[in-house]
Length: 340
Image 1 (cartoon, one colour):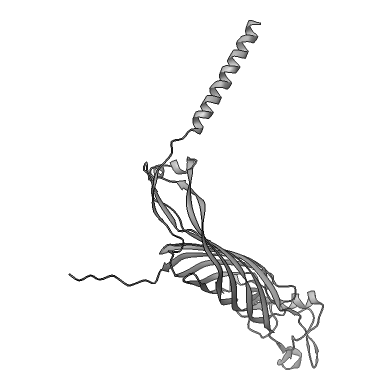
Image 2 (tube, one colour):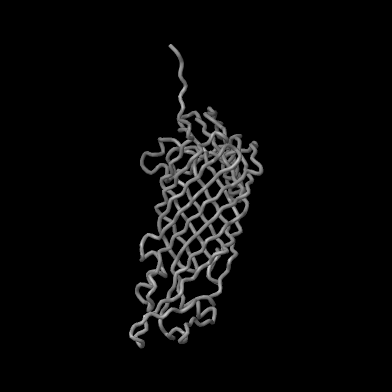
């Protein structure tokens, strides 16, 4: 019995000690901070993106490459954007690469190129109060591997956020090589000229050029906050410009290049096979997200998924892109002058 009582007492003491330790661990000293700025309307106007990498899983033609982009914000009324992308080389342009190696036609496969320009009108642009979670970082964590092994502390402070609901409108165009053999098989069609059908069993490719417009809506969240905590922490900031959007895409012009075939059975004469019976889809959509930072030199990211106008059944795409660096400026080069 005495042993049982002793065990009960030890267990009770152990539980009490752990409870007290846990409660003590929850009590942390509060921090104070100096607010350096908190103004989501005081952001840069012009952003230039250099994109060393984009990767696109496109049902028509998987590709990867580089690009350039730009954003211009006009007060609190509208913003404008432009994008250009191009495959790195033949090896990162899937259908183009296959066409060079296997195609039996005389058409030269084109490189994947995509471009767009558009704008967003701010239907509603307002500032509201919110809270921001700030990770507490100090230079002392840089010693050794203290930051890697340290569970970062954080604090939540009151801040402001700018919310923008916008209406988007713009135009786009792209060109790409397409796998015509796979397309004709999936659509169960035959391409032919006045002398008959294209020879069965031969690999054929073509080129597609698409141009059209998009219309949609967007939602943006903008923070432009910086604080200086006490106790040796560095300046902490949250200056992310985040935008999500949904667009409907329409392409009245989708052109599939006719096939040029040098017929060895007819003195190598060029035969032209019409692609007019290749079915296309003129309507598509996309859902996307973009993020960038309000700094003179920074980086940005973006992602899209949807189905763009293309050959029927070949419109699905998923895109990721990284911009590094991103140059930005507020375009204010004036300086005050005072008389002596």
